[in-house]
Amino acid sequence: MGRLLDLLLACAVTAAGCALLPDPTILPVAKIGTGLTPRMTPEQVAGEVLALISQMEEEAGSVARPARIVSITATRAENVGRLEPALGLEQPPPQGIRWLVRAEGTFVARSYPAGVAPPPAGEFGFVVVDDSTGNVVAYGASPGP
Image 1 (tube, rainbow, N blue to C red):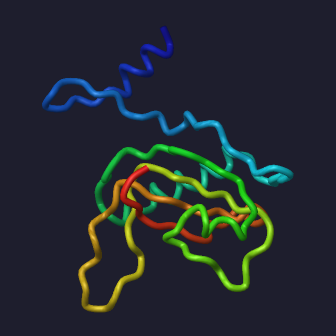
Image 2 (image 1 turned 60 degrees about the vertical axis):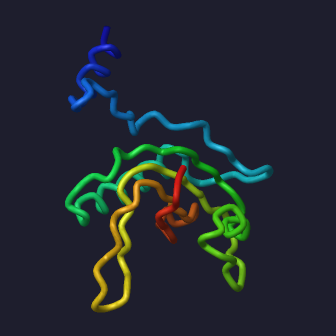
């Protein structure tokens, strides 16, 4: 009964009726590269990502899409650019472990040319978190999950 009540409370009234909102606390199974022992847990990484999306919602003044983690992967830092082509390959290649998280939510550009209006917020994106520091080291909008 408790879960049903939670689902009903998470229900948003729309023109079509009632649609369930995603629960951002439900995480997909994390993929951890062979031989890696991350310092952070997937839950800690997800917390950093959801906090960043919340900040971007405030900056945008709206919610482009409810926040939800789509995938979460711990990999060798030098592999992140291969997994997320928008990043390119860093030179020299970074060391250590980085988490690549794909998510739905509000993704805004924080830097763009002077005199140009900021691009609209994206609904899908990626976030890279450094495992040793817990810092977000890159993020961006992407065309889909």
